Image: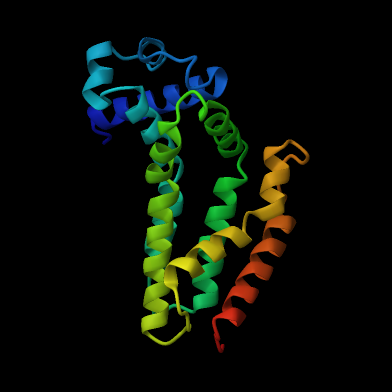
Length: 202
C-alpha cells in the first residue's frame, strides 16, 4: 500500500513537472503547484521548503530510474559489455525523452535570470549519476576488467559519447529524437570504443 505522504509527494512532483514545462521556472508559483497537485499549501511546504528545492526534486526524480540501473549494474562479476550497454540504454532513454529535452531547454533559458539554478540542477541529477558511474568503473578497474588512468575522466567520456551532436540537434529541434535502431547503433559504437580504449579483452 502506498503511504499517503509518499503519494502526496508524487502528486506534487507530477504537478510541478507539468507546470514548469508549461510555464517555465519563473512563471510558476508554489500556490499554483499546490492547487494543481491538489494539496494544501501547508502540505506542499511540509514536503518542499521552496520552489528551488521543488525544482531540484523534479530533476532528481527524472534520474531515479537511471540511478537504479547503475546500482543494479554495479557487479564486478557481470560482463562489462553487458553492464555498460544496460547503463547506456537507461541513459539514452532518459536524456532523449521529450520531457527531458524540454526540461533541459527550460534550465538553459532560465539560467540568466536564476544563475543558481544551474548548480542546483547539476547537484540533483548529473552529479549523482556521474559519481555512481565512476564507482562502477572503479570496481571494473579494481578487478582488472578495465584499465584506466583516471576514472572520473573516463566516466565523463562515456557519458559524452552518448550525447554529442545527436543530443544537441534534438535540443535545437532539428530532429525529434532517436528511434530504437538509432539508440542501439549509438550504444553499440560507444560501448565498443570505450571498452577498446580501456584494454578490455572479452
